[in-house]
Image (tube, rainbow over the protein chains, first blue to last red):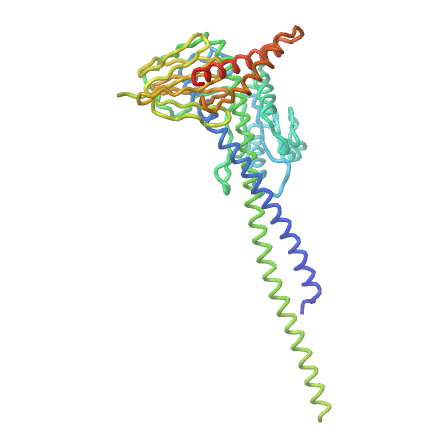
Length: 287
Length: 135
């Protein structure tokens, strides 16, 4: 028969855990609101920017600007966006698995990594010898300026020929419950594959000249894209954590229910046993 | 009548998404009036007044820098900032103008500082000019 004291102790410990997960859920919920507002506000601009760039890439001559030019080389850089903290379900696991699979497929040597988030860095610091840069603690305090810095570094690496293609691996915010791991090509900028290109695609009139406007526009595009990816990831993280903590709280509740039942059964059995002993004792005295 | 699909977005939010008759844009190389069937164009935008006409009404916004793309009768304005006239705080704009002017009068600015100050000044002036007529 289980020991009453042990069960009591377990119930108490599960209750404590439940309190923590519940608090974490509430904290994530409020952070999620802010992050969600940020990403939903930033999306229209980023989407329109991407649309314009897509049109542009479909129209203009790709030799026009180095950031548009496809190159033969196989040197790839992945910008991997993870979180700094755990307890958020499969949020980081999915990203890491996807990245690791990519490394395995394409060889460790030619794939450079740039990692945001402690979780990603901890995972890859022993597995990859080619981490160019890592950012730890970004989830606590993220600003547009950081996206600008990263975008500028990436553009520079690409222009100088250190890498030939750049992808971003991050969680896209679908809804509070759902995130999707995306591997998105950042550079060179390519037009969408399935675009039904009309036959009479005319080049733009550029004001001022092409180079001047492209330089600025592409720089802006890179920054916007990187910024958006980080916001997506932040919102996804809070969503994932909230969902994970919600189910943890529920599980703890179920566990407490089960334990309470066992506890009551054990207590009842104990009382019954004592009663029987008393009755038996009285009978024996009578006889 | 054929209409243009106009979208104005800033990094902060979506400002306008509407069917309109005409759009007037302060381009870097001069003002542009965009009507139906305009040739595809990609242009920079300076600080100033952007207006569009819809059902006989003219709506004015103050924008500060950005890009405009016109393709297939869709006008996409990627602005740094964009405000409707009634959203503008003249007092703040005036203060910003003075501050920028003071800064520009100093001799020890780096090129970059000079450019930011200049941009701020243009933005403030655009806001003030835009609201002048309505006050």
